[in-house]
Length: 357
Image (cartoon, rainbow, N blue to C red; front, side, top):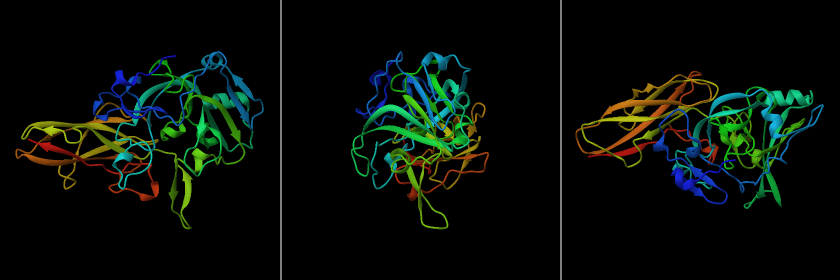
């Protein structure tokens, strides 16, 4: 098992205990994010797990409860998927008034190749019962909720999803970019839930519980939830799918661009269960929009890099850069913030102001 070294990686320390690290988004330089540059989100201390004693328990509404060893899981048919994970609070630092929580800017997102076994194969081996409607992931990490409302005493981090999603494309991953998971990234096993925000991809996975009732745990209903409006009063619902989004990596905030020179505006865009079909860039605060060049080939549930060549004005001053994405489902990044989302799902267009000298 390898450990992450924050200082060597040049990561931004958002919190030391529990460990929360952000990639400087301006360092984005490829489709795959190196392990040492991939953001780290922890809710409690990183657990110390002896893999020789560790077991993945499959419980609940199943015909045959299982306890699988690390080697037994690695002996099953494996699959590798490139998947982008974004923390549901990525971009929180730009909200006004300031929101509670880790002050993520743009770099609580990354794209890696994950190797593991399909959750569907594990559930099939256990014999999922017709009564099951959801699957709960429980991690080995545990601690107390410091701020009310919350249960008394220690709890484990846990999240659930509908059985339909669990059978679709979820991986139980033990490798990241071809290497064994590091402790910070969930060794020995983590869930990878393509297209959903990172809070669903539970690390240090220890239990998978099939349940006949909707799961209403703390991280399903109190935290990682938002208000959804319908025909009746607003309803609190769990955060699930990532929203379409383009983010500018370079130039960054308060960077200097030489007057009259060509400047490459670049970044990444992502969405859920669709392809990014268009990224547009504005260099004048949204008055005019220009089509950026999409790089590489489209991959479902993985980001698409893009770039746009901008001829900077010859007159010194400031310029406001914007980027917006559209996907193959016709979804376009919004201009304004949805206040019902609280401190989460920050996908509205963010301005980057640069100096022209």
